[in-house]
Length: 112
Image (tube, rainbow, N blue to C red; front, side, top):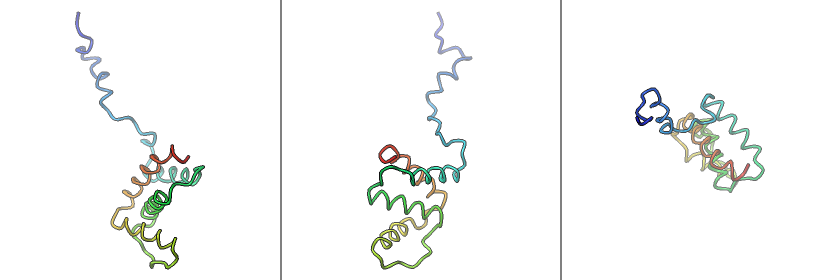
């Protein structure tokens, strides 16, 4: 009896598991993904830790505004946000969107 895996008409079926899973966002543009994820982050039940929140904030600012374009503020919280955003200098807006989406999706189960 022939091994069914050797049947060429079904060989494609056996190779399916070698492909990565399809992202739920695969049909959306990067901008659509980013906007959808950013909206969901605003509705999380629990607030992320300060470090996580600063990381999300800095990626969001880099994604929407690009490199820092304001003077450094003197107020403590605003200064922390400014420094976090400054740390993203040079990252393209598209890369910042991708990183934001990835980070938010990792934190989703923890805070949503």
